[in-house]
Image (tube, rainbow, N blue to C red; front, side, top):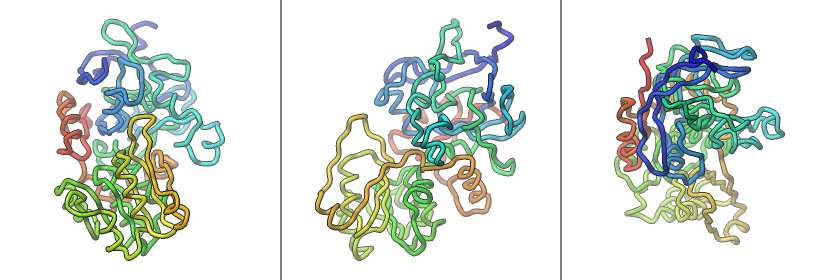
Length: 376
């Protein structure tokens, strides 16, 4: 390729296991086929970015991470049909559109989910980005790699959104916020008048609290160990909060609900907390598991408690979302004042990305959003 076929970019690069992000100059090729080149306005930072940086999930390095991008379409490939230059978009996860899961509306369980989102390149193993020395940087992280001023996505994971909404806020709808809200609405199907408890009141857990309120749950419980998060949970619609450092969470949930919760969500990735969530369910209760520990992590439960009470445990990826429908729905709920996920976020300048990561890991910031480029 000649230089004229590249766009100059600035990207946050992860060069080795656990290393800080480094801001570097690089270049990205033009979009081909059904690809979309997006000028990134802002990108949310998610727990998954950190566990990949630290190689709990073995994405090849050096890489450009970032998977909650929002921005403006700059160019499209010749096969793109429904996305146009100038559209405001949110970037979400990649999927093949061809397997049985995709054909039945369960794209987040795509048979190619791992290689498309964690493979470090396209499906041929190739990168679209070169560093300043002309060396390839692993990209296509969640089919976007949006810790960068420009990103290449596919039409399928590029979600057009209303220009009425603040674009720099919307990126986390592509993963973290979608995961918590979708777990409640799509996976668990929390029903009006029911009880719901989230074990973990981070960005995902509090998104679930917001969604439980939208779904009509009348008992909404948040469990965490950070008092400020519990206070925010009450502000966002939780009817009860439990500090599990100070109280027995299982006993308290059963006291509040009378029998145990109808629905629960575990977002911490800690096996002992998952056990608490299962134990806190009532008869025929269901818990969704979204917390991601290291690969190979085991957890335990009482088999007879599960059996005799008809309890269900189910894994949830990306909130079981049909993204082209669900993400615009969340945007509309936000515009109507019914889904105040803006209360979860704090903005950081691009050069402060490592501070954002540190604040997130320390629990100081629930959902960092990195401002990447100016948007007029």
